[in-house]
Image 1 (cartoon, rainbow over the protein chains, first blue to last red):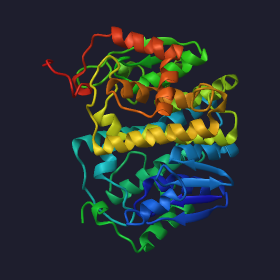
Image 2: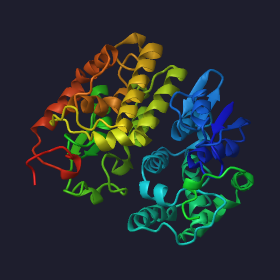
Image 3: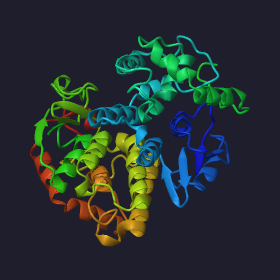
Image 4: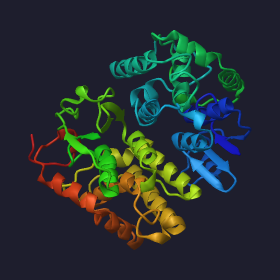
Amino acid sequence: MLLVIGNKNYSSWSLRPWIALKMLGVPFDEKRIALRRAETKAEILRYSAAGHVPILRDGDTVVWDSLAILEYLAERHPQLWPADRAQRAKARAISAEMHSGFPHLREHMSMNTRKRYPGQGRTPEVLAEIARIDAIWSEAKGPFLFGNFTAADAMYAPVVLRFRTYEVEVRKKSYRDAMLALPAMREWVEAAEREPESIPELDLYG
Amino acid sequence: MQLVIGNKNYSSWSMRPWVLAREAGISFDEVQLKFDDDGRPRGIDRYGVAGRVPVLLIDGEPVWDSLAICETLAERFPEKQLWPADPRARQVARSICAEMHSGFQALRGAMPMNIRGRHPGKGMTPESRRDIERVVAIWASCRERFGGGGPLLFGRFGIADAYYAPVVTRFQTYAVALSPAAQAYCDAVLALRAVREWMDAARRESEFVPGDEPYASGHR
C-alpha cells in the first residue's frame, strides 16, 4: 500500500489518512511530494488525475481525497468508525463538516506545524468557526471524540496542530492533549520540523 | 425519516440526498426551510447543530452534511446499492464524490446553482473552466471504465449521479458547451424522475436569494 502525501509541515489533507493508517497499524509506504514546486503537478498526476494529495494506491485500486481514503480504510478496518450506528452517523457528519467547511480557518490559520503564530488570524469569521469546533470537541467522550480513535479524529488532527501553532485555547484540553500525545502525531510533527522546504506564501505571518 | 432541505432552486447540497433517496425509492418526509437573504435557512436551529441544510433526521437524531447523509443511507439500505457493488468502482465513486464535496470552488462561486435561471455564458473564468474540464474528465473516465450497464456514471443510478446532478443543472443554466458524450450524460441525469421532480418544484419557487444571483438584473 502506498500513500502519496505533501509536505508534513503544510499539508493538512495528507495528515488525515496518514495518521489513520498509523493508528490502524497498517504498514504502508509513503511517497512525499513537496508542494508548490515546478515539478509538483506532474509528479502528483503520475498517481492521480485529480491532481491533489493525498492519494492511496492499494494494488490496482487508487483512492484519492482524504475522506474517501478514510472510508476505503474503514471498509477493511471497521473500527475506524464508531461501532454504534447512531454514533457512526454522527462521526460521519462532523467528518464531512470538516471536509467541506471551515474555509476561514483554512485561509487565516493554515496548517504550519513548526511555526508559532500566537493570536494571529483571529477574524470574526475564524472565531465563529473556532467556536463551532470547540463545541464539537467539548462533546468528546474521551480520550478521543467517540472514545477510541476514529476517522473523525483523523479529520480533526490538522486542527489540533493549527490550534497549537496559533495557540488557540479550547474547553476540552484533554482531547487536544490526547491527540498531541499520540506517538503517530509526534512522529508527524518531528518529521515536519525536519523538512527542509519552506513555502513563503504559506508562512502567513512571517 | 425526515430530510430537511433548503430552496430547491438554489440548494445544491440539498438536492443531492433528496434526489438520491427519491430516485432509489427510500421514503422520507420532506421539511423545507427557505433561505433568508443572508443564505441561512430560516428555522434551521431547531434541526441541525451545524446550522446548514441538508439534515437527515433518523428517529429524531440529526445527521448533517450531504456526504454523511449519503454514506448513512448507503449503510442503512444496502439492498439499494447506492454505491457500486464492485470494490474498484466503489472507491472511484467515493473519490469523485469527496472531490466534489470539498472542491470545485471556482465553479461553485462563478456558477451558483439556479435551476430556473438562464445566464448563458456567464461565470466562465479561467478557474471555472478548469473545474468544468475536470468534471467532464471525471464523467468520461467513469463512463468508459464503469458505465457499461447503463447511461449513468457507473451504469445504474447511485450516489455519484446524485452528487453531480447539481452540476448538470448548472451546465444548463449557464449554457456550458459540452462534448456529445458529456451532454449525453447530462441528458440521462435530467431524465431521471427524481431530478425532473426536483427541478419542476424549483421552477415553481418564487423566492429570490441575492447571494445566489450574481447575474440577475432588475432586482434590488
